[in-house]
Image (cartoon, rainbow, N blue to C red; front, side, top):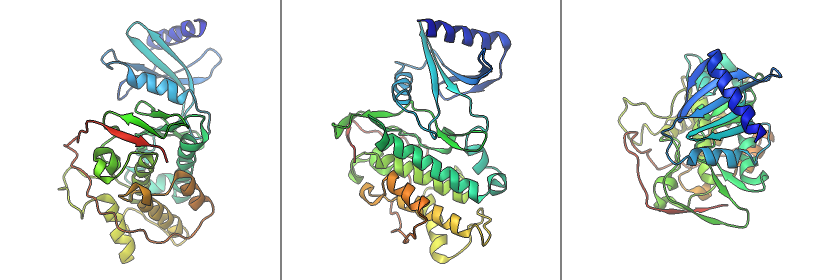
Length: 318
């Protein structure tokens, strides 16, 4: 009870002091500091956030985690229709503002991009295998990867996450989850296979390909076709030995760029069974193992104006 009162006071202080406010997907985000000087971020959900499922998911899932590559939850508050979450402050913002910029590689450099890819992989491996309860995030994308003062990545926003008890291999998934452009094929159509931790692997792979290509995985002014499916865009250039224009690699960084591209292509394989686990991804990065060229993915991504729906599916933890 005391903790709740303290959090309510903190939120009220944010309003009184007119702390800088940011827009969030499900509410408003405020930056401030506690009495001990610690900087924090408060995510205040709107009244229109429905049943509060996103809030409950975030509290339960992230409350079970403790990892260098997972954003830390400090506390939460429920007061009538108001719901708030308090997180550690991560000063360098989200990954998207760096990789979609005019010259992304100049901002971070290939070595740092490589380290970020490895850090996110470690965080996902922890969620899938290191927790007492496995967690499938379901919304891995650059906007949900925060960077601290040393540009160490931290996975954030667990509003769509699913908890998967270790002794249960199959749970119900009543609706599609994720962001168009990063959703694994099996999530929007069961014809491609079962939904599993490999669905996070697909989202991660698409994000890594964006880090390599320096742009979003789909452009709104381009007609949907197999030629414009983003993994194909990367794949064709690797096969032809052509430069990827946005990469700006040097002889010293070419190996890093190619390794990231190959890992991304393996992770975005259409069939879940052909994708590596996140543990294997970490091993491929850290041991600098040689990678073969994967098969070319055969799926074209769904149009962004279409949100496919499914009545139900099963979630198989592998």
